[in-house]
Image (cartoon, rainbow, N blue to C red; front, side, top):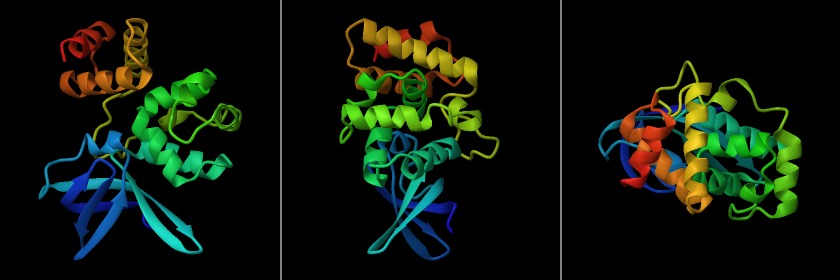
Length: 204
């Protein structure tokens, strides 16, 4: 089974990338949160892959960091009613850090705002995964990640979550707050404090 693809990025859209590796062009479905981290076309890229095989189809789903791939696999494999497309939509709507926090704190209202996720499905997601999230998935880190995650460790994860919560308190919608803090984190670095992330997000 394919676990990783490393090669030249031929082209990319917010939800798809084509990577040339070993003379083969691989079409890989990606979330927006991974698309934001891709290099320009023509540059080398590494994507952590989850292959999904069905009776009538097979598809590759790729992620900038291994912990995102692992979270995707956990959702698809453990939660009935959530397939790869819905899982990708969820991870496009919000960062894995925000999604993990929503699951572990039982924030059904936030999860149910994702496309294709109703209240019952969100509740089932929390019940199935709340006790299964931990280690590299919960912290958003991995010793073998090739493209660095914008959040590194529990301290940074807390800063990220606190910054998102602050923007929501200021009137931002949750997905917009998450996106703004993601961009701020990528700009300032993984060890940024909550206040710095908020300032950078508010200043655009």
